[in-house]
Image (tube, rainbow, N blue to C red; front, side, top):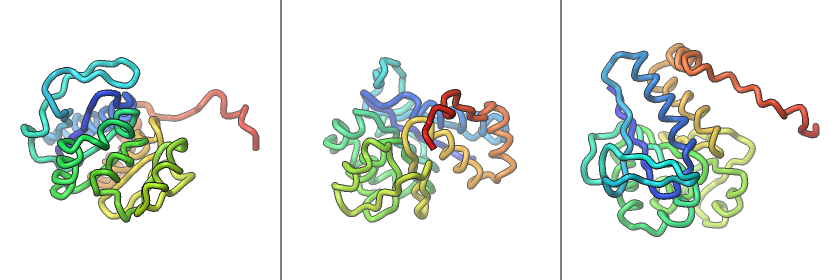
Length: 200
């Protein structure tokens, strides 16, 4: 059984956690092994995310099952607000010590750095925040990589890159064939319509 815990907070970027949530929950359905994904927040009330989506957490920081995987999303809430929230950074640090895997999407890596687990590690983040994260020190920002693995820490670039990272992670935990089945189930076959407009 694998339990995925996805942290949510005010002004978290929606797809940062919803994309991996889809991957993790489809993985659970296909495995039929009582795997589960839960949303964890500081408080029990609904959380308003970056684009206005409101989500209701399943658990609070003090009331959740043991987590095998901890995922931290990005967004303004991660890089501006939560890095100064001792309750959240303390919880991340404590939970990361017990989890098998710690993951972040986008600027969630900045929050992981503030909490401690990303310090001294190789990480990815949103392209617009790479310099900011690097300037914080004691971290190696890997550029031009959709996701980066350093031990049990896996971090991804912005927003949609979290889906790639989550697929890699379920493949690492449950095998490549399983990850391929998840990818097929969610019909994840990226074909951006405007890539042809990009200069070579």
